Amino acid sequence: MPEIPFIREHDFQYGQIEVLAPGIRRLTARNPSAFTYYGTGTYIIGTGTVAVIDPGPDDPAHLNALIKGLEGEGISHILVTHCHLDHSPGARLLQAACDAPTYAFGPHGAASEHRDAGTEEGVDVDFDPDVRLVHGQRFSVGALEVECIHTPGHTSNHMCFALPASGDVFSGDHVMGWSTSVIIPPDGDMADYLNSLQLMLDRKDNRYWPTHGPPIKTPADYVAALISHRHQRMDDILKLLAETPMQIPQMVGPLYPGLDPRLIGGARLSILASLRYLIANGEIEASDGMPMQCTYRRVT
Image 1 (tube, rainbow, N blue to C red):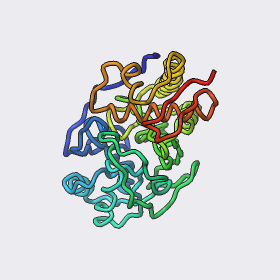
Image 2: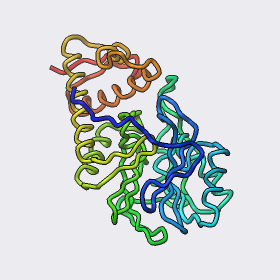
Image 3: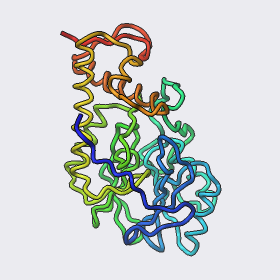
């Protein structure tokens, strides 16, 4: 399996808006978990007139710290990368204080058919942005120009936000330095995810700011490693199923030796996403039944 150069050292402080680079600040919510790392990083871009990216969970303390820290400045945009519960619910609390519109690709695309405990942070099904954005769209936040990059895969509505002048990208959960992204079908899709990674690789941006964890300062090398990792994972699945047909729970141990038990649900769904990709390519077939109960075999 190709090694991903994970970046796990994260310099941050809870409860304090930190200056990261000119025109880029961050406030980290206290919602650490197996899926959020140390918590949701809410970014503020611009000065004077600012946009807030991913206001975070429904956490009044986090939003109060954000609002207090931005006293004297005006919030013109509330940007949301996608509507998992650790990203978008805070937008409603923030709007109550500043009345800025929310901007995103759209609401969540499909309700998950999987209810395994510990698979994700959950979906904010009530989120529907005031303004729906499209890929390639650009708008201004004060003196800053912001570009929208639609990156489906983790979710169908995932949107990254770039600052073309500096080459900074706010990559949400699409690319994170501390971990790979969980792909949860049917809304999450492996083919979309790989295509979105290639889109990011082709852009040649300078630096990524994920919503969870530290920045990625060499994004081209990192994204290339993510792509190689996913293809190798699917090769491993093909080799495993060439020996004997299996159900998804049986595949977790051989594919993820030593996995943190909290991540088993997420691993099962990532395997399912890979299997759906391989089925679409005619390399795997499945018996009838629910995805987690049916048997998968390699097509010979």
